[in-house]
Image 1 (cartoon, rainbow, N blue to C red):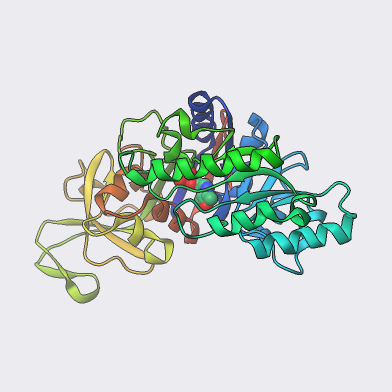
Image 2 (tube, rainbow, N blue to C red):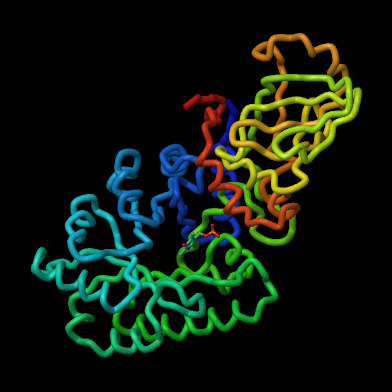
Length: 380
Ligand SMILES: *Cc1c(COP(=O)(O)O)cnc(C)c1O
């Protein structure tokens, strides 16, 4: 099966680079299994580097993280809390991100009954400044600020919001969201002077220091996705993916290739069938007109991607014919579909897909994983 290499040294280098850029706390967003790369490995490596703030989407992801993150790591749950699950936050020392008045009331009431509110457990308040997804609306925020019962019983440690258009530095919504956020922050600081502020995701970091606040929440950039349209940013690539060749064949007469015979191969063409297909997320990674690299040569996909196999035209690979009769397990090269040149940002731009989707589709794979950390490599 394919070999997915995750360079944790590069993740660490990216985290440090972000730290130098913002000069404030760089939290790691390791939801969705660190975008498919392994929350355990990424989280542990960053913890060792000194990262103490980690964001998860679901409660389960955050609970599972306690197997690799000590209790001094702040673990935030973006989906927040619902009735019946409050005790799990307390038991695992997790911090809910509260995004509606309803959720706030559920949390405050439970904390009050459970702890006699002395002291109240920490939480994060999330306000909506233009994403219109999660977060308190302006009306809800006003209700919050006018409710003495809530204000006196809640312990919000962070006020956050999320940018909808940060990957486009010229989008006017960035500045309107920042202004709304600043206004809300000024209001809340009156009640909670210690509250930390956070608005930027990876791309937000590159909108300038006005967006940095006390904490940024970065996922994509840690994993090697270029956070801006500038493909030359110093963010290091993290992922590479090699697919083993399981069959080499030379075509001796014009013939259809793959399902639907969509491609027609001609005499003399050399085809490599590799292990991996759409069941491994590869249709997302390769898109239409997919290419890979084989011994330094760019090789196109031919025919349709099937569930477990993809066919590449390797005719141009030097000396390829000399390997025709070699047992597949002894072929010492593979087809690279993600490498430093075909990196995730490049691939997503080429396929006009989202780098995030390309990354997370890796998790569905049957890949062997290789983690690089320090001078060591570890296979999982
Ligand atoms: C996923 C997520 C992030 C991380 O965004 P990146 O663009 O990957 O850096 C930050 N904040 C919130 C609320 C998120 O849901």
